[in-house]
Image 1: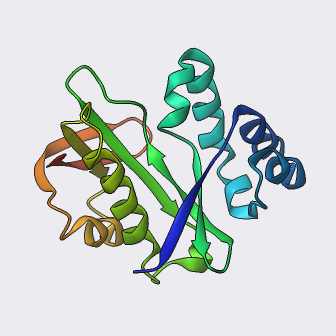
Image 2: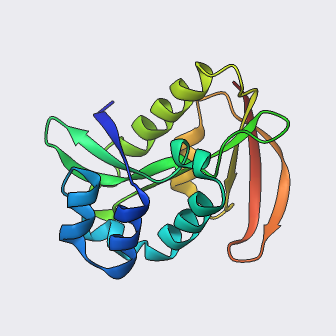
Image 3: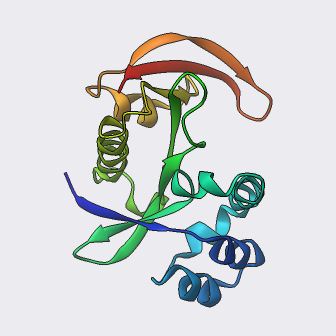
Length: 166
């Protein structure tokens, strides 16, 4: 599995990504970022608003993923937010198409699961995946997720819901 690390994206970095200012985003993050992160500006708008409403959520969301030792950004990963009242968190990750099919998604998921497994506040991990997303369905295989049901997402349509104890 490839070696990765996370770089937290501050509100300043998120704002720069939303504005398409890659240089300012990298400066705010303390690491050069990628055009792929700029292309995800819709997500950064959601995450910046989330941090404004709940500053503690910044510890759970909005992280660039850096491959090591290359020090290149290959995607992003985190959670939809901190644990809810039941101790559940939902994983969220994406790999730049230029770096897909190299094991990065599994490396990101493994690192996210390692984090929640070490946190006593987390009891359950959730993953919501389109039944048409064969790559994501393959990514979670072998990580202890079981199908718990289905849901309809206003933007993404039908999603399969998977759960895994932390």
